[in-house]
Amino acid sequence: MRAAIFPPVSPMQYSEMEQLAELLKSIAHPIRLKILCLLQEKEMTVGDIRKEVRTTHANVSQHLAILRSHGIIDFRRDANFICNRISDGRITELIKTMRLLFCDREESRNA
Amino acid sequence: MRAAIFPPVSPMQYSEMEQLAELLKSIAHPIRLKILCLLQEKEMTVGDIRKEVRTTHANVSQHLAILRSHGIIDFRRDANFICNRISDGRITELIKTMRLLFCDREESRNA
DNA sequence: ACAGTTTTTAATTTAATGCTTAAATACATT
DNA sequence: AATGTATTTAAGCATTAAATTAAAAACTGT
Image: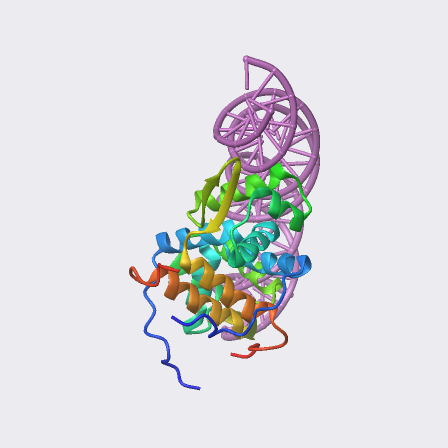
């Protein structure tokens, strides 16, 4: 396999590492990860999500707030309902990559 | 843009989400992220890493232990030096993807 | 304006993380 | 075996994160 498919990656300033770590922390939770996977398919309300996740409405709402505060998701209001959706395409890509690397069977495990 | 470049991704069991969240948590720290970026290039000792990171030897060692306990890195002994290196190719891929998505300038920001 | 949804906020408790310091272990050299 | 260097471990403390519960907002329909 060739070495230079990817362009040279940028340096790694500490501030960049801090920002990236912040972002990763915000998605490094089983419920938030699940929420992001669900939102890949369609927009969903707190209630919709709660059905898939086995916790309280309040808790789902808190997790959504965390994702929102990091600009990862977005919402629109429809009457009483708040429809949440992914707002940063990079997150969609990242989730896809992670699922390919770590959730699919026995693949791409070598350097 | 086409929808089906990627093969269908696997389901999302809660246990899988938990595992993945664990893994993400272990890399979601600025120092550990920096360590992983450094180890992309070459193997390094605690001392080598400490020069790049501005913290104590003990602290670097603790962060390395966390990465080791998740099977992300590996080491070999050379006299009293311990040379650390990445042991899971999927992590290399993940780091590369993240740097492309989030550290390079102004790119790939749209869905 | 009142009752019925849906969602958010706040307060509390509990658990997990991260850093610092100091002491211990592992190996090499003399 | 004694000293020196590299690394790890352990204890203590401070900070942050997560879940639960209860109360408050935001909106709809009557």
